[in-house]
Length: 306
Image (cartoon, rainbow, N blue to C red; front, side, top):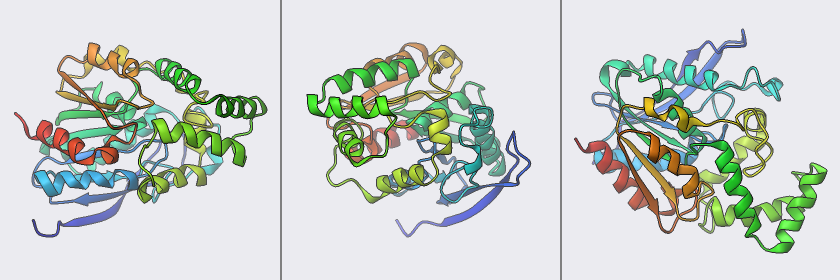
């Protein structure tokens, strides 16, 4: 295949809760003469870079790909002054931004696919609950069906760490210390087992974590100070309770060692009417890198099937 057509730009977005003019930055890979895949990154605030492996789906299956930076991260509008503002950092903010992007590219008429990874899957499922016109299929990769179940999974995984690591994490948590070298070193043990098992990590994943560290407003307000300390405003989210509203065929993917353990994914499988679930045996949370070829094969064949 020849080099793909790549277009970048910005979309005006009137965000609820602010009068500040907002922009959503996007990148389109391929020509929008056929249904594209809209990619929803995790975080909140991880940015599009760590999802660029999905461009493989254009190269191998000729599926155009739309990547974008959700509001407050990467090249889109930032709101560092909104740290802790739970009335601003809501699902509605991100769902409306996604709808604005879909409308901008006239995807309700053209048709489109959605893939959401981690938080992006929470966003994608929330958007799919409304049964938007043109949505053809949905992929939820490492996306929790329930945050209380995810918190329970994290507690279990933490209990399996070496005692000295557990002690350091517990001591730092009690002090509210989430930035010391000791905490970061202990956290890295968890991340190396259950977030990404590659060594070294791909640069794009480091970029995503860098975005969150540079402007943590959305992440800290909605999730909390770390992957396994969930005290933000989505801590009680139970998306599976509305999953029966998802009418389109849906593919679930997680990793055997994923922080999104099987019990965190299972309610999706039980509640979505048309669903398939695959667990990748050599992956944790970054399945689209850890078993990249298999991940792309699963997604490509699912999206291209009748």
